[in-house]
Image 1 (cartoon, helix red, strand yellow):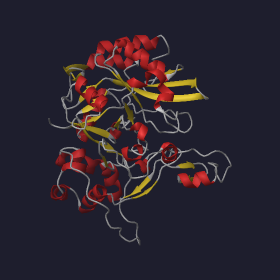
Image 2 (cartoon, one colour):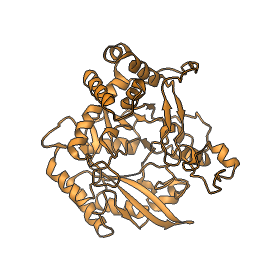
Image 3 (tube, helix red, strand yellow):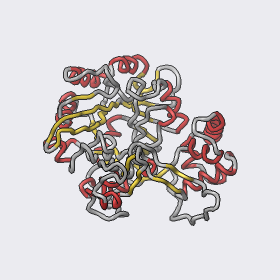
Image 4 (cartoon, one colour):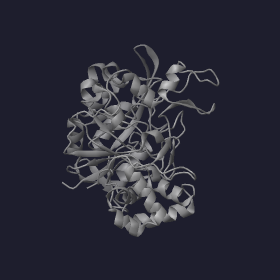
Length: 421
């Protein structure tokens, strides 16, 4: 079975703080540039966007769609994200985000009818409901048992199942009698599988990774590599069963680059590792208020295994930096600038796709198509030769691929990461 890359969480232009370019055509174009064969539609609960989905997509396999006109290389799976804000247990400010996968247009119509009775679907691409998320599971599965629900970005401080500010301390505490229907979680940009492996309670779950893209160029910054039939039932089976033959690996951000990896206060310019925060009772040393407790801190609170532990059923992960960021640092220019964009497009055209360049092409082929400094940057990323200042309190972490002037080179640690195919 030929492997394919899937990004199963994006947002449309109908979600808040999302690019106006996030339409189906632009998603398909960027998916092809990235080397992604399957991408989520996102936001199918929004009535205007759902009308576009029905008008512009056609089925090509069970539960899999493509554009009727335009870019035919990318396929779509029906998925949305919803927000629940509710009181449960000891907290009145529970806030969770959940991905919902659906097998057909008809099932989505049933979901939208059911949810439309309980909230305003047209106000945002990611609608907000005031009932417990465990009730969401029952509502969706009553429409169709073929649907799959996955807690999104499971560790972020707000709007997640395990977040420090509004989350739960276990899957069972959150979903109660509906727990048996939760088969996976999304790790999010600020955590990776290695961090999640430290908590034995998650061993039975499949860990998936997705971009949560709000703009086209961010599609695929995290993703999943499947080796199964490109059909909805088979993809869902692989996730439910945590099938290592069907889900080969996930593609990850370096979690330190995520916006909530470490603790801190951005306005106070305070960045702290978890042990530093705990020594100060999680209080900001500048303003005296509670710190924004990050993902690493929260993982360590719940972990029952040491750092570096690998469970026997673990599905591996590889860590990447987007090609645009490598090019930008190599050229000494900002991401999004004309020079960086031109070089990105040239390299993707020469190499086949972004993932082919970052993961699969042999070094001699990359050296053929890339200027020397960009080639060196790609090789450094493959070997993990990086310096990273962790992200905190909504600020992305800063990655340095090349040593700063005057710094000594550090030896590479370990082998290069696995080849894609």
